[in-house]
Length: 92
Image (cartoon, rainbow, N blue to C red):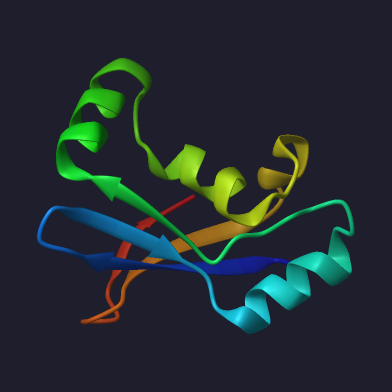
């Protein structure tokens, strides 16, 4: 898997990061030991506190959401896309 899109939905009290069912299936085929999940919710205050200590939360959301081992994460291009506007918010 070369490219991965993570959808970001803004909520009243935070953000929901999610991947599609097709993406989850693809991940499970390529990485049988991975256990991808549908979504992760992060409250605004949690994100702010987390980023002040550890840096951008996106780099931690990716392995938590996909279940892909961290040594593989550097080989994939990851885009975080706003679910409403379809604009790219962040990538690595």
